[in-house]
Image (cartoon, rainbow, N blue to C red; front, side):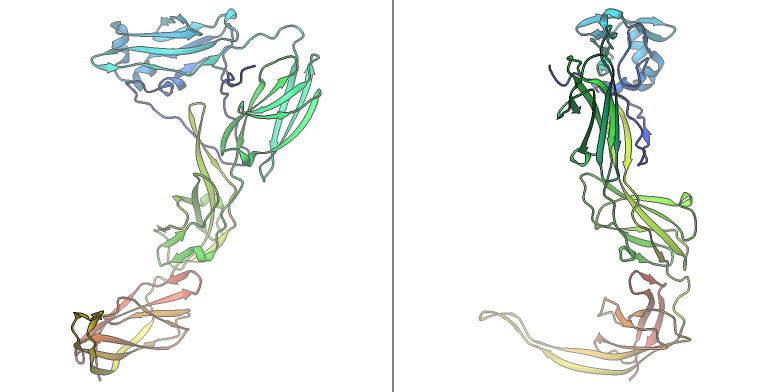
Amino acid sequence: MVKGTKKSVIAITLVMALVCSLMFSYQVKAGGGYDFVENLVDGVNSDGTVTPGKTLSIDAQKLENSCSGFLTAYIKGYVEVYWDVDGEKRVPEFDSGVFKIKVRDEDGGKNYCFFVSGSYNDVNYNNNTKDYLVKKASSPGAAQASLDISIDKKGMATVTGKITSGSATFKYLWVDNSGRYEISGTTFTKKFDTTNYDVGYHELSVELSDGSEFYYPKVFPTGIYTKPTIKASNFETYAKKVIFTCPSFKGYNLDCYLQIKKAGEKWSKAKTYGPFSAGVPQSISKLKPGTKYTFRSFLAKKVKYGGKDYWITGAFSNETSVKTGPKAKPPIKSITISKAVTKKHWVKPKYEGFKLVADGFWVTDTTYTVTIKMKKKPGVAGIYVHASSNSPLYKYIKGNKKVYKCTFTLGGKAIGKKSTVQVYTKGNKTYGCYSPISKKKVKIRR
């Protein structure tokens, strides 16, 4: 028995995951493959097969919409359309703008494939569908069976089967015509780990002792059985935005998405952001200041099956809440710069071996103290201060205080000059909760 002859069947809905299909609009004019007309064929069974006696039809206008100029080329005789039936060319009837053909009883077990062939005005319109297997009528006394599958939250599948009529017994359980499990009897229960298969849709079938080939093809989805873990340390919050860093996760070609809502609201009001790559900070804006938000994330993957795209998603992560920074700037009462001292010091020359590469020189700089007095304790974890053009980084002073002090050094003689002092608060040790920046020009005094 030759494997690999079984045809695709339509995908079932993943119960534990959100699945959303998107049908593409193809614009193919030259050898684009069967996706060009795949979704335009009417009369195909839900399992991807066709039935003797049934009519297959394709709306010519839909072909025209997918590939501009097709109808003109067809009517002028430059393009032909036909069904290939295991090497036999069958030309469909063209009636009222629809290509129609009736599947013959004697074609049971054969494959139907629709072709567009030809070119016009230097445009090549060659295209085709995949093969559609014609069902065979069951012979008297042929075995009949039922097959079911369930998958738990960890990805462990339980498959059960039962011979409902006939004298055959079960022989093999197949996954995608490649993964084979031995089974026997008129009933069976078989377990296997679906995490060994790629995330997406797979075909399950059984082989019977009477030689029935791939009886009862059934599609099952393998889901995403891991979930990201998020915590407050994955966030940095500001007055109107949050910076989110997606946690690391195991999984091939998966995307991470973040859902956000105001604390206390239902998740139906949440907004979804992404996809995010693990370890890469992403900014989410247009939030309200001083507001507590709740977050959760999930992993997802886009997969293709039966000519359509589907999204398979994993379980939601744990929930975590953080608060955005305050709308107001720090409650500063005054900022002064005092105790300024100008000093001159020698920078030694630099040598590489015995070779002088940089001469020594004198440097003059001014060191001073910045004092920030608050109208009241700001109720924060600390503040950040910047008060020197020579120091690009902010200095962090811990604590919830009414008075904060720190020292800075500025190049040159700075006494009597002005320095722009910048201050903002950090409301939470874990995720920041930063306030807007307050700026003030202050004179440097002795």
